[in-house]
Amino acid sequence: MKGILRIGSAVSLALLLAGCGTMMGRMNGDSEEPYYKGVDGNLHLLGVRGGDGMPSAVICYMMIVCPLITVVSLPVDAALDTVLLPVDYVNTL
Image 1 (spheres, rainbow, N blue to C red):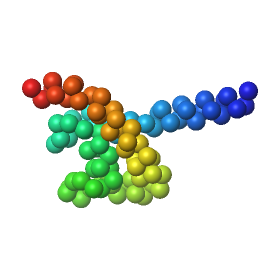
Image 2: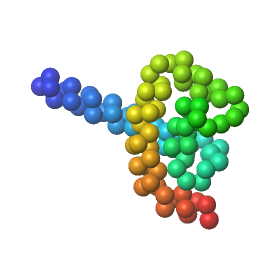
Image 3: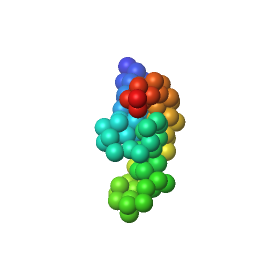
Image 4: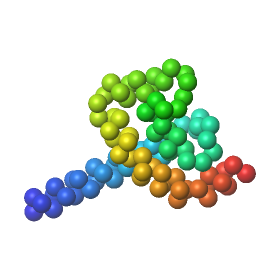
């Protein structure tokens, strides 16, 4: 029973953390990119993109876990953004 509870907790935590960049990129609405908004949001959070002093990147790097979670969730966000490409295409019309 303990094994099932541990596996269930690990899977639910992974599902909660996966795709958070996609949700952030779509909720903000201030992304310059019409496609792959989640990946763009993750790159802004890591400080790779953006030139406004990057306050979110500074806050992210102050928390040690944030860059790790962002890098781990980047492939999941890329996959979700690929699935959502038709929606983004229709929204750009």
